[in-house]
Length: 195
Image 1 (cartoon, rainbow, N blue to C red):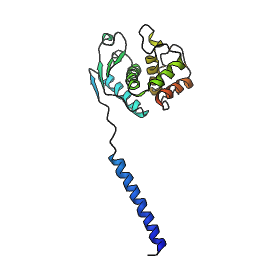
Image 2 (cartoon, rainbow, N blue to C red):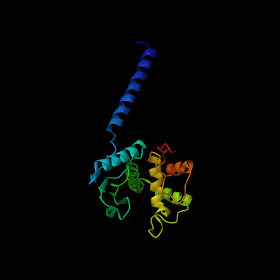
Image 3 (cartoon, one colour):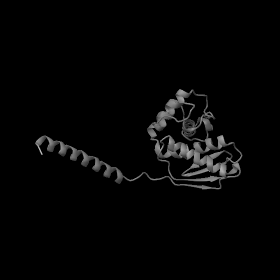
Image 4 (cartoon, rainbow, N blue to C red):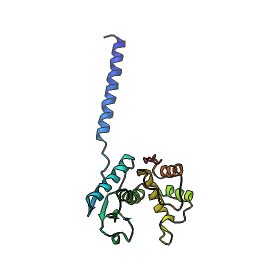
């Protein structure tokens, strides 16, 4: 074998070794932890809405949802008179008498609280509040629409939704501004057709 052929064989062998080494390293990388979700008391329709919501987060690439326990209630008493609540890994949904579109929206919204809490840096939230002119993150002395935690959840819900229900904000905002705020919070493009 001449010198040129030997050099070519050595380069090919080195290239193959590099490819095999890279494949071994990638295969040894631990898989991301799967989200655990326990659902209690859901009707079939409510369970489908929750499943749809989880899939929307995955489709959008919003990984890092913390483990959640989701409780469905037959009256709004379980949600302090509202359609849903989130606190410390627990979501309460009171959506039985709502349309499928609103069941999905409320599930997305409450999951947004959990996702934001686990994934969004405080500096990003401060910037969001500055842009929006929001005075408080979650002071209950302020109206629901005027609190930063609710506006962030509404904007993420808008970005993941199917465009059927407008976000509940103090004022209407155009799609370009909503998309900019969604990108600020998530570092991703919204998947809603409304964008």
